[in-house]
Amino acid sequence: MSTYVYGITRSSHPALPEKMGGIGDPARAVRVVTHGELAALVSDAPEDLKPKRRDLLAHQNVLAEAGAAGAVLPMRFGAVSPDDDTVVAVLAEREDHYLERLKALDNKVEYNVKASHDEEAVLHQVLADDSELRALSEANRAAGGGSYEQKLALGERVVAAVKQREARDAVLVQQALEGAAVDIRPGPEGGAWLANISFLVERDDADAFVAAVDTLGKDHPHLVLQVNGPLPPYSFVE
Image (cartoon, rainbow, N blue to C red; front, side):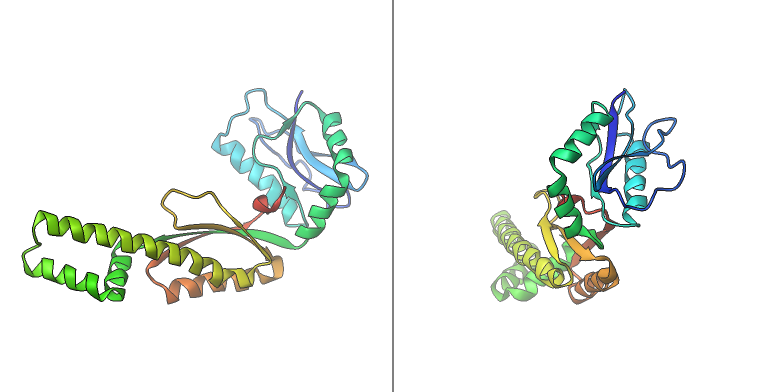
């Protein structure tokens, strides 16, 4: 049977709770395979493994439980090896690299911050910052909304101004929070977010990081901030 891998840690890592369950239905028992100073958290892999909600949560729960006791290199959901011996062979082959990464991630957690604009608030912000654009908007309003061409011209100017504001606010979010972190990684671009950034934070500084996010939101109410964490440091594992 194939072996499912949750993450890699040190062989001296505290043991998981007895009978810890992982993915599968019924849940496969989580066990540990070791080589030298390294250990991999694994279980048997179901033959029909799919990213079902239950299995995604089980994967996260195993890593959260292990991460609460020390550094873990988390694998993304779906990491399957042919068998335990293959896992051991990889631990042996990459031992120095994995130990270096574990040392770098000791006592650290990941916070992911996504930022978007409150549409109404950022529109007011854009008009307040640009007197020419504000005058154009007021002229259209005074003219009963303006002609089609005037509405189109105003809309294009507003869209361009909002795009510029998004670029500036993406930099603002990073600069406001990077001082409370030890490392950062940009997330995938696109979607509804003007910023998607993962921050590596000292576990003891987690409250200070969350407070920095709260301060950022209060100081810039046109920003909508979504914080996810503390997480295993997925974005900082190579």
